[in-house]
Length: 130
Image 1 (cartoon, rainbow, N blue to C red):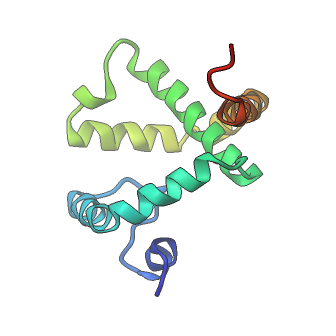
Image 2: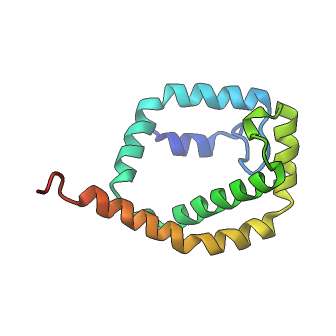
């Protein structure tokens, strides 16, 4: 049996996540998530008990850097308040700022590594001492 990750990688119809998704692609992803919700949740639970890999940490840093730039562009507005076309335009704007995202992500990486280690320490700490 294929894992969800390999299934997504093999399907040619799955969108490249660096590009903005169309409404049909969003609906398809939603259905796939609903079908595989239990497997995904179990995987998340297992991953929470482990130290994240360097690739995973870089992905987190990139996501946080993107969020920082989005906040800077939107100022006091929320991304959720934007229309579908507005979000697509925002994504295109953000895609043009890859160098800035990389620079910010590099600065954020040490803090993210520390948070990951702290998370593991707190999970492994004995509960109810005292």
